Amino acid sequence: MFIDKAKIDLKAGKGGDGAVAFRREIYVPAGGPAGGDGGKGGNIIFEVDEGMRTLMDFRYKKHYTADNGEDGKNKNMFGKDGNDLILKLPPGTIVKDEKTGIVIADLVKGGDRKVIAKGGKGGKGNINFKTATRQAPRFATAGEYGEELTVILELKLLADVGLVGFPNVGKSTILSVVTSANPKVANYHFTTIKPNLGVVKTKHGDSFVLADIPGLIEGAHEGTGLGHEFLRHVERTKLLIHVIDIASLEGRDPLEDFHKINEELKLYSPKLSEKPQIVAANKADIPQSEENIAMVKEKLKESGIEVFVISAATNKGLDQLFTHVSAKLKEIEENYIEETVEVNEEKVYKLQKEDKYKFSVYKEKDLFVVEGRFLERLINSTNFDSMDSLSYFQKILKNRGIIDELKTLGIQEGDTVKIHDIEFEYYE
Image 1 (tube, rainbow, N blue to C red):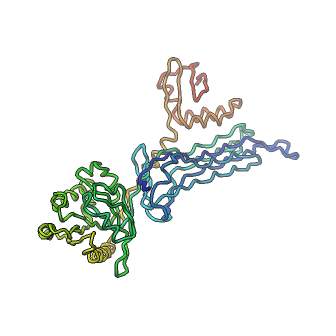
Image 2: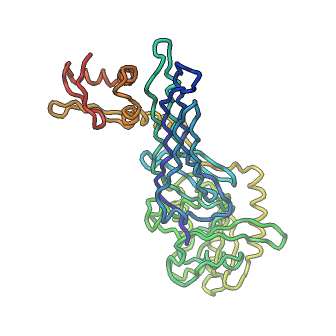
């Protein structure tokens, strides 16, 4: 089954918590702090596997979680880092953040890899909080949460040449004749509902990858008839073979069909309309095709577009067509620059950074409520029986702007503040 789009949830590993521990050796009467740091949470990494052709693996499993880091230990021993989770993707996969639509990664070549969700940092053990005035800190920090996001995976087939044209003009038949691919072929519209790939080998020993793009129709650029799903696969081809029904078996004008498909390509992406094209006038074995052949050749000659008269049913003209295509590809590849999607690293980084310390403060009757993911970690890090730990807790609230936000809402001494299921009385 061919799957070229998937939505999955990712959750990188949480960092391990820092440890609160003290030296207890028999010959060290006043042992200081000895709590080690927690290990880093595992990342989620996408890696290109050239053996994969679809996103089928992501159809049934939608949630992926990396390992958490290990908690810190006594004797200043660090916790073990969580294992990274590596997910394999086929070449040509684009990764987008579902919430913003930002492209996170464009994975094209075998071995390409990208960290998509970073694991949380390990918490600091109490040894990190020893100072000249705080000799025995009885608190440590909890590990940070790993990044969580939902991503859209989109596969764009990596083919050298794409077959485009209206439904039922013979694209699948051409692919089945010139490659070992076995697409479904029948005499009705939309026989092909998924792109098919095959390798063409010419009699001169050259080879290239050919993609049969399902039939396009008017309005495809707006998504009509799964237009977006199909057009996406044309974007990375270097050359297009535009197949037309030269016999007009369905009563359509082949020249008009040619212009309509090119208009759809242009409306979807101006770059598509600029790709080199060769016209394959198919079904030339049918007697009523003669009149159209002369007309199409004459009209397209003005545009400098070469027309090859073929019959996929009888193999007429296919050798000449694909020998020419192979030679044309060599010309194109001399100056071809691999088209990649713009990846906005800065935007993605900024988005993740802002989300990390995001909080909200609001008033609910007489209660001031403070919410934020990082505050849960802060609460878990605080030893409320230790003045040192409470002092550190208040310092974080002040530095992150939470105290200022509470003052803006009019908080007074003695008012109650609720932070992650714990209520406090507010004092300056």
